[in-house]
Image 1 (cartoon, one colour):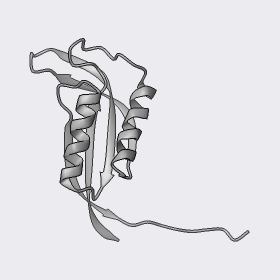
Image 2 (cartoon, helix red, strand yellow; image 1 turned 135 degrees about the horizontal axis):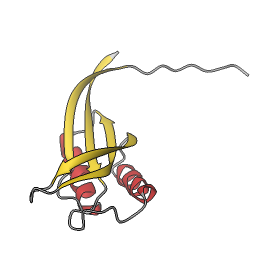
Image 3 (cartoon, one colour; image 1 turned 90 degrees about the vertical axis):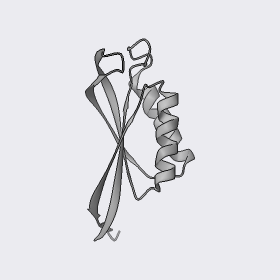
Length: 111
């Protein structure tokens, strides 16, 4: 087991201006996967819902993608977050950091 740093980026799917989701969630997921692949970053992702107060005070509930990565350098995390904020036309995205204890289990079956 070793210590790792988990980074999580939360990306809402409602457009920052219209405050409505413009494309199917699957299209956003495909774009997120492409961004991570282009940065050569391993990741896990899930879709959830959340609420957000825009800078103008308007509250929206929206579909949200949660992107989790381990031990990715801060500079790369910032670039990924900026790309996703831009590509998804967001007012902002939220980035969180936490410590994690990680180990991989590998097992095979002899055929």
